[in-house]
Image 1 (cartoon, rainbow, N blue to C red):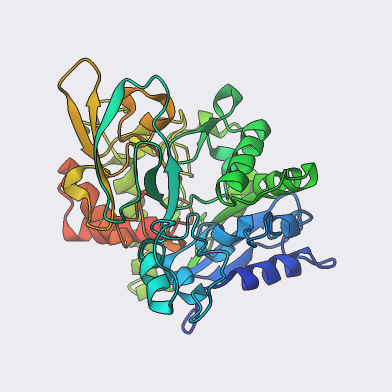
Image 2: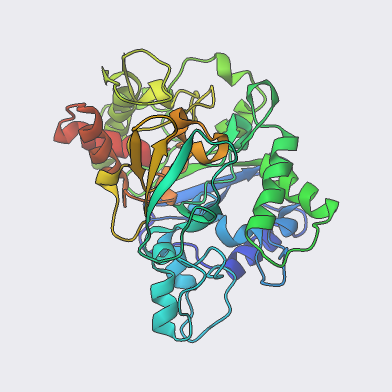
Length: 440
């Protein structure tokens, strides 16, 4: 069904698609219309725009002289994030001007040589290989810790300009978020992200990603936020099983758009999308693949293991994947918790990332990390290495995973967490869990 599908590339292509969605009656993004699907590595990712497509053009509109737009790093074919495959396709030999590869944050450091194609490619290796955008942050005033050592392979970071390399989070399914950004810089009122929080985040993003930005118009901010508020995205089909809403399956984005108007927080944690597939008859490959997805859902929801050494976690000492990813049928944290599962640890640091050593004031306690996470927002020692629990819908379209792209694929992410928590997954368990995560 999906043989020959190719990933969706390019900001120009993204803008063209958004323009097409905004076109006359029959637009795929009109409320109640069929989801707009695009091929991804495993099948197809689909988007519903519940508010209509009137603001789509603003999302693709450049907000600075460098040509940056929200759509530069948030693309429909990548679950409204961006992938290294897309970045590599965007890289143009001989070009010295490209909004995605701006030296501000599309390079490993703004001071690196970019005067040849080879130099430009090397300067943007983290974006091209892991889909990472450079964030620059300074030490917070009044922090309970000091920075005592910087080991930066790109020879740029300092206490006044720490370089943090992070994956762009999707801007879809925000109706189910309680906090924004990997470090939780924006939260809304009443335990959910609201319009003021989205507006602040949009303004911060426009300022951070364009050094030459003039004051954005109210029309721009309102349009961007209005577009994001109506975006619901999820995997809609897999090569192995076809449509994910067939034979009693409840995959795809239409369910999410309907859930946004319900009190979803009162539902049971975890997922209830593929229970109908658990006992499907048939020995054919499609039936077998559907049963595998359903078994993976059961593992995610109910396979218990010890949850130890996770700062920020507030649940029982023994839980399942759904204990942290507890937002029903979405997979983010209902309480907006930010946690440390060890992804920034010195042990997992790769040679292309910086390493920072922090000293807790008044003690001899030190932490060495590639990214201190929430601590750079709050200045609190207990927030070291804590990051938000990301939603899981559309996961297959936006590899690599975790804030620093340390897991290249869904199987890599499952292996990493299986080792971290000593879950004891068998090879079949892993296949089933990966199949389920790919179907989100």
